[in-house]
Length: 397
Image (tube, rainbow, N blue to C red; front, side, top):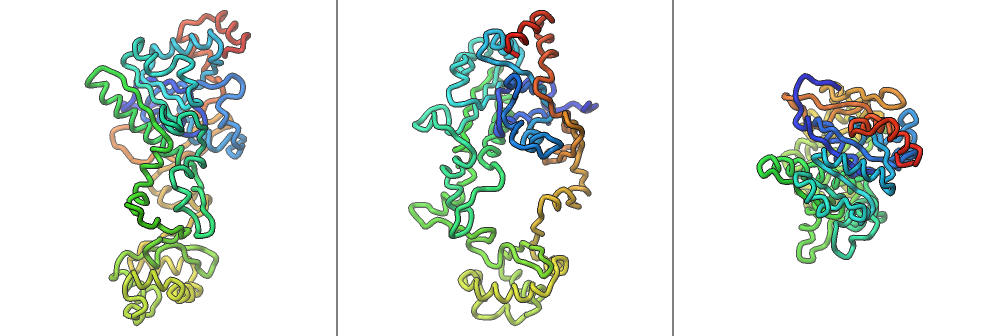
């Protein structure tokens, strides 16, 4: 998408040996800010995330989400001709991102130490499950496995059933810390003229998000209980059913709100001073008894009636939306948060990146087909049509 306003990363070239979620999400955010992202894929099949599902006009939902505004270059890096192309690309690049299998990039001569002498300004970002050293370095790592290792499963779910997050939180955490680390390294390079090595671990990224439960269990204290969608220490705080089948999530934070909740929402003002419930600690201990009272009132209210009462009482609340509800969310529509992105299967709606910025427009260019830009990039690197044909015949591209 052409823009008359300069973007923060205009002119920055990113080469990415990426698959799945963490690295593609990182580099898509760099592309949003104007960076040229050249995605290196396997000849033929490409990034295996292309095959995760076919929910977006035959394309994979994860892939459409994380790969707009990129160029796709196919290379079989086991072949010398393809490896030479990659080295030519790195000579022009500002950033190299990779989340290949542990040790794979180093075996191909793409480790930071190997590259630093030839490309001292290059920022190299390695994303892995456990980091480049330590006893877990060579273990395979998928999102669910990291959710388990980082303790996330132990605090998520119901008392009976530990549950993973419904999205890839470990991948997303790693991708976002890689993104912010690369931005920091580019800022530092602007002052020092030197590149950096960034080693991002999925375990450490999700571990950062786990600091509340870590401190909650400080010096061997009991861990927070698994309470589903309810709060572990505050009540009422969580999902409640309305009469029409809808679910409203609400939260009380203090005694003033408890009083208003009783008066306006439950319309039982005397309950506010009931000795069973006159502090959060007591309400938390008496969840079953108080929950029965709340649900009895809510059983006579539709979702909208309940939301109206909660809003009147200035009690924080939200509808429990499904995906259709998010697609149609009036707040997203009112703030013009939807754009259109081209894909090999046609145009699709896409959420703009979080954060409205007055000084530039986010880049929202197409999702590439496998190898769509291979020939153009090779010509840019000085390969002749005959050389490109030989690379194609050999399966190097």
